[in-house]
Length: 125
Image 1: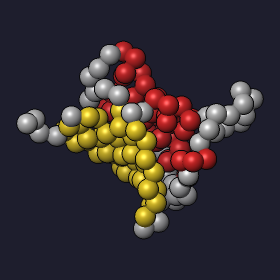
Image 2 (image 1 turned 90 degrees about the horizontal axis):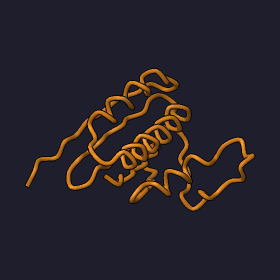
Image 3 (image 1 turned 135 degrees about the horizontal axis):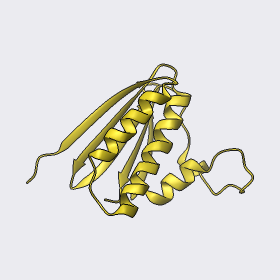
């Protein structure tokens, strides 16, 4: 059995530059078709951008590659309810990102515990 590969990033609240750097490193760690890589990058971008914007202090991002590629984003901001994610009208100001993420990920879960919001996406790679 192959060993798991794990990468971690820590990003301060509002630090979009560090989020961008982490996204580039994340993409460099992946293999797959062009479409799979595009979807994975979009998922990373949406989840991390939301977390960096909503966190009170910081965001922890983890990529685990073992059989599947799993992206975990944890922040200390407000969480969201997966049941509330749905298609939005084209003229809506926001709210489409999580719907797209849920559509592109193999699986998307959200857990709220100890004042932390943990979002896990299993990528289609």
